[in-house]
Length: 149
Image (cartoon, rainbow, N blue to C red; front, side):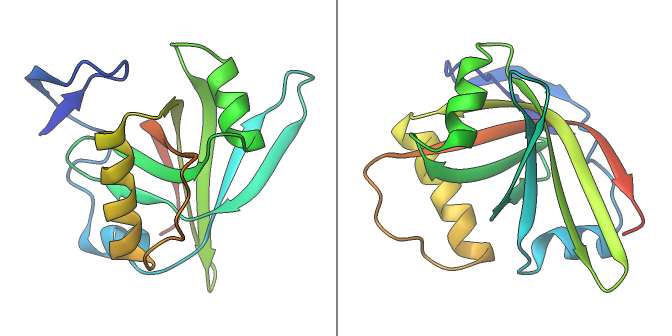
């Protein structure tokens, strides 16, 4: 069971929820924890797909994938423009014939605590990111998991 995090910034809900990421195998967790670049796919207003390489981290308890980026980036603007309901996105990664996609709804947060959590997790999986005063965090609530990893 994970703790549901309020996507609009008011903190932690006081109820427990089962995440689609709960109970995943150790092999699956390792696949999403080892240092690998990911692909973030979003849908533009004209219906075409925008795919970009990102560093992504998984919060297994909350069922959230985090991506840190600049607030002015195309991906952040696109997700922000989707409003409070968030934008449909997919994060994928692959290695040596194994692949996995985590699909869900993404929102953008500039809240300093949430950005700091994104940076902390990014640093654990990859390395310390460069200083970026425009940094935001994309928070993706995972709704579907597929692949062969």
